Image 1 (cartoon, rainbow, N blue to C red):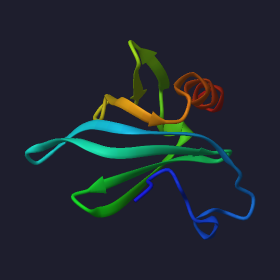
Image 2 (image 1 turned 135 degrees about the vertical axis):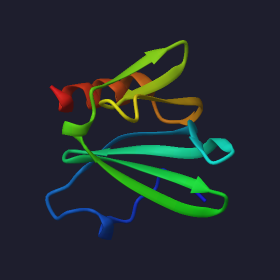
Image 3 (image 1 turned 180 degrees about the horizontal axis):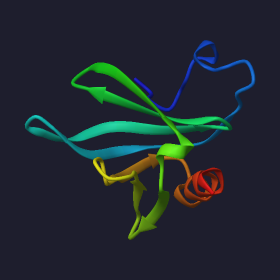
Image 4 (image 1 turned 30 degrees about the vertical axis):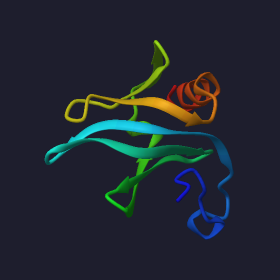
Length: 109
């Protein structure tokens, strides 16, 4: 299952897909902390697509809900306001981290 692919039917008529990255998202849910996942950007929002034990799960974020995207030692961090904090993505298998971070940071300005 490719998490980076998104069906055109899921997009708004005015939406265009931007850079995307796929890797391992580090976020604690119950006893599990590592999830295969992807971040897909559009000109209007960012979509997180995660494999939750074989079940696809998507969550949508407005760029207003993101503080910044940053890269440290080949790890992508998406920083959210208080509550979620920073969410890390490691072991990126698809996509360009710098292109993705630059795109997100341009949108959150």
